[in-house]
Length: 364
Image (cartoon, rainbow, N blue to C red; front, side, top):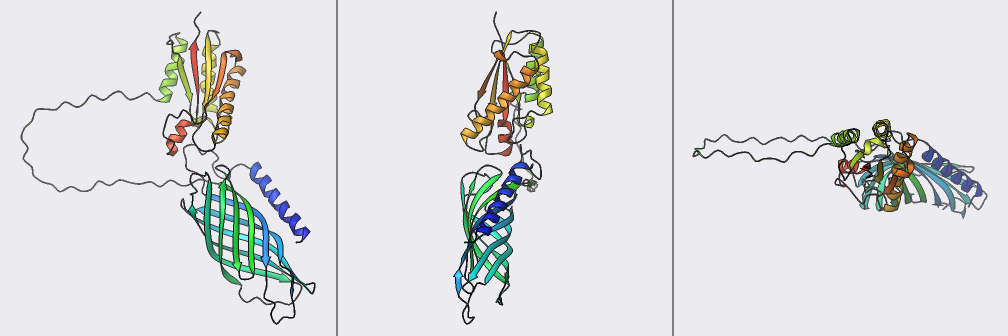
């Protein structure tokens, strides 16, 4: 294999990984309450097998394998189906007479996942793909292409590292004389668009019905609706101000809107709520705080334990910076062990991404 092509491919992959990790998400990076991103792009390196037809040419093949790289851009049309375009540089095949022929290919097609699906971004997907490609060659000897365009086929396996990054292994059969085996890293950006549905009531036929008079029926007494998080938080702060806490204390809830996706940095609305809490607690040292972090179910438990711990620590650090004694604040991380809503929906996952601050009045 050619050493220069190996170095070029590794350099291209390193550059793409660095840019992908450093840049912010191209569309909205706050995915709270929204579906997962649909657009993706990636770069990979691999090994090619190149076997041009040398019959009746006077040439013979020397080295048919080389290294190359592949760039692709795709869109998830559904959980199973994606559309993808690509450009690949497969290196070159060397001939026994010191000549060589270089191969480049570009095209677009469809990718279908037989195992797994792409909306949950967990586990392994197995897929097949097909489409139309266009091949370009360059050489220092005379050659002739039979067909510039071709139908390509491929298959592969993908493993979701997290919601943004996916590791892929692909086999691409571009033409009878060109096969490419690659390992790639893909990065998602943008978000799925939600589809709005309108429920239409079926028309009912108008029928005349004679009904016997009945005793009036009293409507059932409905239980009062549970107060919203905002109302509960306001009640808790008011109880602290009036020294009217119950023996069980009260809880302030910071829901997902206070955190960027995959981040423990507090946003302004969370800081405003914590400013009110610190102002009411500073005059007295008779309160003990328990700060607990929670996440949704996306990702491994180990990863979410760390994320919930970091978010709870952010809240504690902010309160300490605003005059609350750190020794009076305990921190707990629960990952996705204590959900308050159904994790199967985007709304439920948003409710579960939260930090709770429990305020308990110390008995003297």
